[in-house]
Length: 213
Image (cartoon, rainbow, N blue to C red; front, side, top):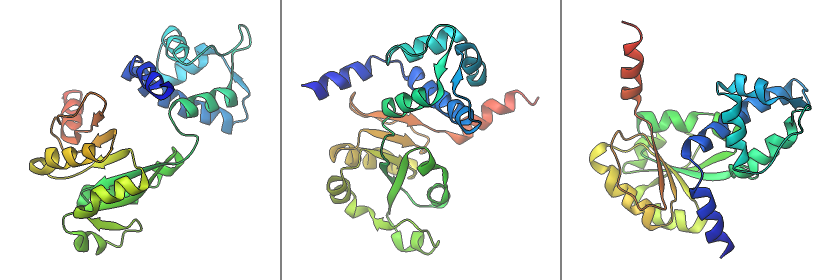
C-alpha cells in the first residue's frame, strides 16, 4: 500500500522538475567540492539556469529546505536529492544493442559517478560486440528476460535498430523494466507505469543547426 502511494506521489511531480533536480545536484556537487557549506536560492538558481521561484517550487515537491537568511545546507540538500532520485545505492542498468553507439555508451565512465551501474549488455550478435574488447559482459539477447528477472533490474538503455525497437521494448516491459533511455529514434508504445526518455541525436543536431545560420 505504501509503495503504491509513493508511486502515485512521484507521478504527480512534473517530469521537468525531476530533470531539474539532476541539474541542481550537479551544481551542489561543485559547491561541495569547493567546501561551501550553504548556498542561497538565488545563487543555486543562477548556477542551474532557472529562476529562484522555480527552484523553490521544484524543491518544495520533496519537503521544506533551507533557512531564511541562511540558505540551503549544501551537503544536506545533496543527500535529499540523491534519495529522491534513487541514488543512495548504485542502480543496476542494462543496455540492449551493443553496436557502434551502444559500445560507445558502454565505455562511458560517467554513469557510476551519477549513481548508475551498467551491469550487462545484450545483442543479437554478442560475439561481434565482444570483439570490441568491452569490459562489461555482452549476452545474447535471448537471455534478456531471465537476466532482468534474476538481477531485479528496473532501468534499460535501448540502442537497437528502429525496426526492432518496439519488439525489444515489449520484452523489457514484460519482465519488469520500468524506465527506458531510448536512443532508437522512434516513439515507443509503453504502459503508463513505464517511463521512456527519448534521445534523438539527429534531432538535437537539427535544433543546433538553426542557430548557426
